Image (cartoon, rainbow, N blue to C red; front, side, top):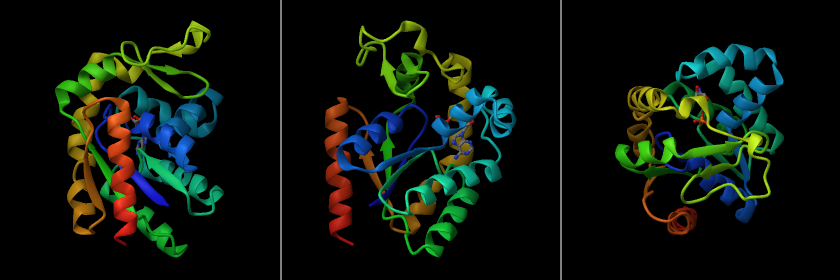
Length: 214
Ligand code: AMP
């Protein structure tokens, strides 16, 4: 199965993709997680990406393209869930070209829909495990007590002014992909409001219905 989770920052793509990878045997490919790991390792890519990420802007496409394509290649072009890639029409075109070269087109793009009001509430309460990248929510999914609190951090881009900037970037640069994928009959909308389990069940039934109708 080759799917992408799509939606604004904070709709729950990362947590849902992590769970899909654990339960459905799909590789979770998140360009955000890969970039944050490059940043921590101090690699050239990380150093270059940092200035954009700190400013809540998109990292230049040619950088992310390489990272995404490497990850998909490592996974033999199948059994993956993309999270946060593609984020522009240009990236979507690259992805489509790359996957078609390997006869492995995307099967479904799940658009998780959540209002901006809920997103702001979720992101300001989000915390992340600095090593595993696992997301927590202070109220609904607090970090387990056994974890060293030093490893649980608030992402810089989850601070209030950054959240609004990222939502603006999403609206301008990423949201046009909704029509792009609708035109290709690949986009399905899933209500992203509700408990984690409810949203997950909706995603699962959507992707299996979609796969069955292919
Ligand atoms: P995320 O963890 O998906 O919210 O990504 C965190 C940050 O990484 C974003 O705000 C961007 O700066 C950068 N980033 C992640 N994926 C992409 C992408 N596909 N294109 C450009 N920048 C990206």
